[in-house]
Amino acid sequence: MSMFDGKKILLGVSASVSIYKSCELIRQLRKEGFEVKVALTKEAQSFISPLLFESLSSNKVYTDVLEENSYMGVSHIELAKWADVIAIVPATAHIIAKLAHGFADCPVSLATLASDKPKIIAPAMNSKMYENIATQDNIALLKKRGFVFVEPMVGELACNSVGVGHIAEVEDIKEAIESLFFEKSLVGKTIITTASSTQEEIDPVRYISNHSSGKMGFAIAQMAFNMGANSILISGPSNLKAPYGVNRINVKSALEMLKAIENQIRLCSKNDIYLIMAAAVSDFKPKQPSAQKIKRQSKDMLILELEQNPDISKSIKEKYPHIKLIGFAAETNDLIGNATIKIEKKGLEFIVLNDVSRKDIGFDSPNNEVTIIFKDGKTKNLPLMSKKEVAYNILKHL
Ligand SMILES: Cc1cc2nc3c(=O)[nH]c(=O)nc-3n(C[C@H](O)[C@H](O)[C@H](O)COP(=O)(O)O)c2cc1C
Image 1 (tube, rainbow, N blue to C red):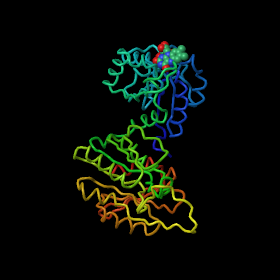
Image 2 (cartoon, rainbow, N blue to C red):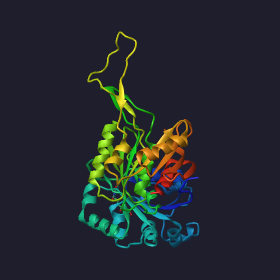
Image 3 (cartoon, rainbow, N blue to C red):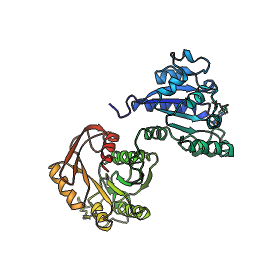
Image 4 (cartoon, rainbow, N blue to C red):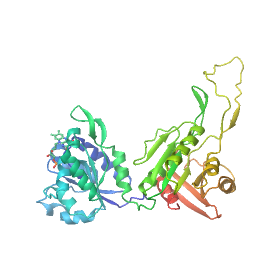
């Protein structure tokens, strides 16, 4: 059971060379639980046959404004009513112009005009076409009317040139669509989330670290954006993709993480800043990292002297008492006892408790089962669910 089960997306597809991205988008949306129906412009049908979209969406495809009754007996009005969100991916300069000026001469423009639901557009075109004042004015007009744009990137374009107009990544388009399904209850709040592990240098090629994948912190940062916050992610080394809409700052060591948090706090206005410490920060670091690679020595053992890293939550709370702190406790024994001590010692609002001794949840798993312990001693158990859902349930308490 996913949080998007049964939510309905009408995907409008127009005739861009990036059209193949819409096929991958359908696959990703359906994996998240969405139901997808597709409307194609006439020209889009010259690029890819409706049959492929029919097969990917497991739904009949809307291809002709004059043959509405063949669309499972449903008119464009009903199709527009059916959708919770209309997503136009990829969007050509031509379809953007038509939507801005109220045209209704193809399945995509007709269904969009007939809908009062949230609409999202992922433009894809040559940079000259994108930067053309006509296109920019059309985009500005649609934005003013509430259309959400997933901005194109600077990248390689089909015409063998490099410039702005390259369609956004499919994962980002999916995240942007998902974000439309959340109430913006965190508007006005800045949420700084730390994620992943830290690396503490032993020498230029070796370090001390831990198994944290960063998935939980990344999911929180993404959800904070979805719920309307100014979301900042300060991450230790991780291969995970930067979440959509989130300002990601990369760090390596615990000391770098502390500095990055302080920089962000100084940049923010005073009010409503939350720090969510989902990173697994190394408690210890080598006291004197070697400037040169340590060579295998004649003796059998290498003794490393470790010293404590600063306690990031505690240091931040002491220096910036207005910051509201949420902690994570990755415990393997006496879970509740250890977590409760941390709430008091670090001045936390609440703590999210993970049992990292379990293999099916925690560190690298896509799922998690946590208990939230509040400072008044109340607890809330969240059953096994995706890290995305855990993130939502945590952020609901801010
Ligand atoms: C191979 C090819 C690729 C094209 N790629 C794009 C594109 O990426 N973006 C765009 O705005 N137009 C592109 N065009 C032009 C559109 O297909 C043309 O403007 C068409 O009328 C758009 O129709 P539609 O918006 O109704 O789908 C391309 C044309 C061809 C032949």
